[in-house]
Image 1: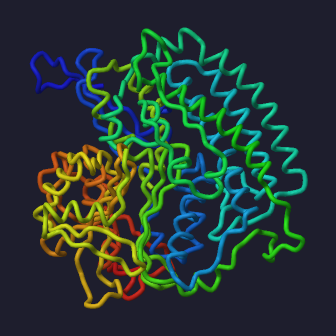
Image 2 (image 1 turned 45 degrees about the vertical axis):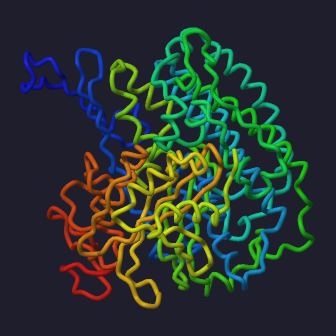
Image 3 (image 1 turned 180 degrees about the vertical axis):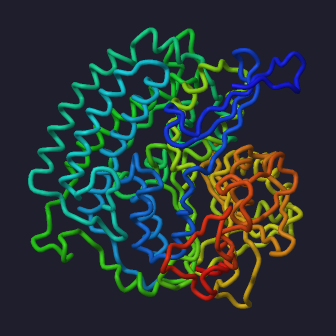
Length: 395
Length: 183
């Protein structure tokens, strides 16, 4: 903390948060200039976690990029895998020679794992947000429930964090014996747990008043600043890629989209930190429902797996060796909002350009705008409410 | 709410700006090629016109056309704007080509503030200077980094502030080990 000698009486104070502040969800640095307790300017400093993932994408072959997408956002690696694979498949399918379709069982499993991962990602988000405003316990409850999802994923693909499970053309493994029972058991148990979680945090007057009216983003601002996902819906914009541009089997599931509506009551506004929080909780409820629905759609396993390691794969091997030239922009809904891939293929085994647009990047872009004029103590609450995951900003 | 197809959007834009061309990628994906000088006017028209109402900038990125197998060969930096209308639910891609040497494009951050961050990233990784951007600083790489890594002719530096980039036994593709080059 230093006093800035350039202003009269040294009234402006520069506060350097990070790069290793525990509340910043990764390695994010924020330079805050404050006038007393009120933030005058806020300058985020990015790049501490830049791993040049887009550059790597140009150097490796198409399927070899999938493990790197795990690292784009490791809190929801399944959704990150899925975003890239869906985009790559759409690009391959623009080639007239392509005749493959992703097997229906694989499509259903993709939705299943994506929704389970959305649950665990939102649990981290709401838990960390509660922790950021001073309630430590809910974070542990969230993490404890997330373990249930991690256990299922570990049995499914051997990994707890970076799964490398969704492949171009299918999924790497079929469901293991007893997976459906495990998932049903987890969902039942988890639904009961959410009632307890809501009693502890959501309806807690202290927490609600702490977040009500903080860092309000209007619907117009949210659209103009490129917010996506729960941050956009928290501001009352009714848009979800899963419902409006369906991929996999989302079109058959009738996705319900919750939007912000000043949930905090009289003290709150549409688009405040509490609305963004509640939208995430409602999305968890919706994901539970979607998991159950997609289990009903799930066709039985094929008698004989068409993949040597037991995966469910469309035959894309030949296409990946010699793909057509061209480009495509495809977006999918990850827990932190739209994950858009812009891919350019030059007809060789590796992509010419891989562009990954993530939700946290634009969420970080609005920080300096919403943080002007708020209290210093609200800064971490704002970071928590936008649910930024730093590797996703820096890539 | 009335979603327009690409052809209708292209017709509406071309009626106002005849210099805008329809560009088809090798796999048939359509985009509008906008002359560099008129990108701000086109962007303003697309955002404010009631039938088009592109209120959201979904993505702003670029790619280097050098080494892309096209006839005739090109070497421009192609800036790509992905616009989406939350009002009408339609989408369009705009493309602006910036010459490699004098790589500057007017900023659209006045139309969509989301472009503030996107343009910083494109400047950092491709070296496209967005004229009129209020704070065009590097965002991914350190402030004292040299070059723009996603350009196809980018040469990897051998060292950064005295730290070697390669471990023993690693080497650059074409150049001798300690002078940098294409990897």
